[in-house]
Image (cartoon, rainbow, N blue to C red; front, side, top):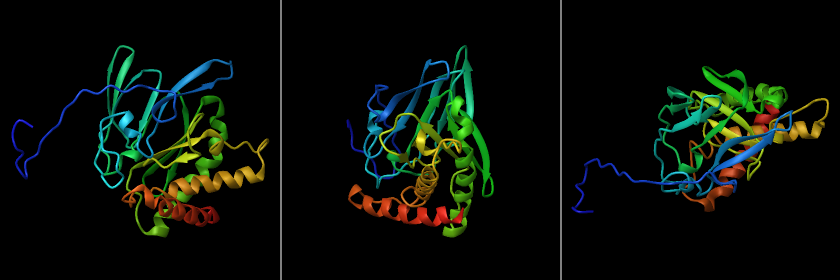
Length: 255
């Protein structure tokens, strides 16, 4: 600094930063799928756990450090963007728009998330005024009905069971073709490998249906254990994951 900082004053730090939409399933990365015509379609997804948010924007990735975030995403008009919070406003120009999302609750950087895709969704209402949506590629969205039904019920059940309201106004779950883990508990925007969301009763086994239910219940449990209450460092990840796994059986049994 050119001069000493004054205690109690508010300072703003600005910098230029260049990140790349990579193919490494980490940070802000590119995923693909093929539609019914065999055409390759692209989407952009985030996976920040444990310390990959720094690939997308300048930040401190320690889980004990929390901040609020305002996400602004530019996209082509035929696509849709999602983030942790609901869309606040859209500012457009020919062929492109800026999606500006509401300011988030305080959270760790590994829980920040955004998705840009041409996906479709199934809506459901959970609890009081919580919007619950499942997103998937258009040709597969009909197979998301089961998760839409049980997911909204489990979220409402957890609110009652924990006696702590879900603190966000919406919950989106996205069936991603490529992801480094089976599911990621981003606050308000859970990303999961598509086979952990999509269920076809004419093809899939009962065992797959049970496994799918447990994964959904596990990721929703993290909205409280991990997101609302966060370990100070990754050496306590066993507590975060272990408790979510335990609670997932309670949520699964409920439905």
